Image (cartoon, rainbow, N blue to C red; front, side):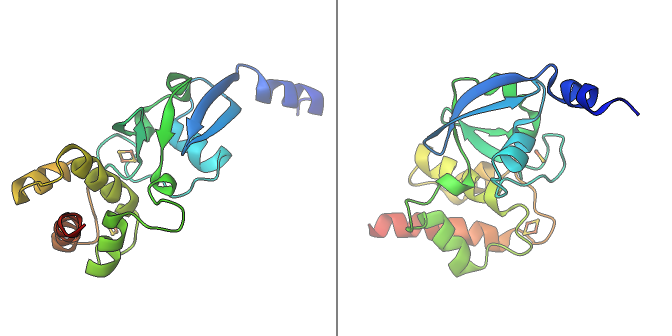
Length: 170
Ligand code: FES
Ligand code: FES
């Protein structure tokens, strides 16, 4: 068993200070350069809305926006986000006002266990920001990087269709 002081030296050895913004707030934290952004968000910043599904870049459960681009945070070493602006599912609502996509998921029953839901919502937000009037094929394509183990995808699809219609109402 190493002496306690050696253990604590080892635990901080190799860490770097990383500065970035999360949901509009500046953050500085110490992390190993290759730590996954997913883990830093969940464990250090306690933003548990970002989920881990596959851990291999296949399911989209860990999606976040980095400088406006949607990415799988399980594949991003935290060193790469130095100076970046990150938006997680916690930053999608405007204060108390949920995003139209979030409201649509509630109304249409788009969530079951909820593991894929933050990633699905972010994928839909990403789609609507780029294409406010998507066709059904555009919606299927926009969600195609996200896997759900619970549903037959219809409720999720209907939620996004509903969110599109609500946008038209505004
Ligand atoms: S957990 Fe990152 S893509 Fe599945
Ligand atoms: S709601 Fe459970 S994985 Fe999609």
